[in-house]
Length: 170
Image (cartoon, rainbow, N blue to C red; front, side, top):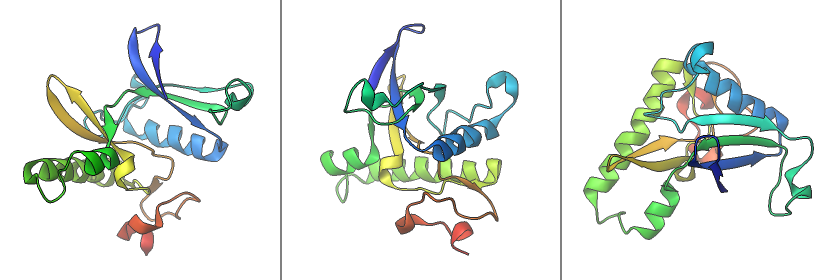
């Protein structure tokens, strides 16, 4: 869901979440990146930034039946996710340069999680990488961090079993 942040006069994406545990993990993972003064911000070169987060008094479906959840993340708006690009842009098997760029950005983000944060993403799939465009330059960034886990820890209740990393599969 897209909206306009009136304080910053910019477009944002809203993610509504139903599960309090997953919401908490998402926020906790995002605090790995820094100090309290920078909100623990993860490196925006690799991860979509969460600008704010809220716990609503009641489930959003009571306001609008299309919305579900009482936990809300306000994030930097992206252009689209990788699933959309692969399905509609005709890059798979045809545009080597675009595929190499996508893979480079995905691998760079996963290395950032692994090497800098000592975590694995836990839910790696095309839908969890989104494209941003800044100064005419495209960049694919990670989203959906509620399944991220520290190295040598147990898998969370949420994961993509088709894409489990070796660190988790042990």
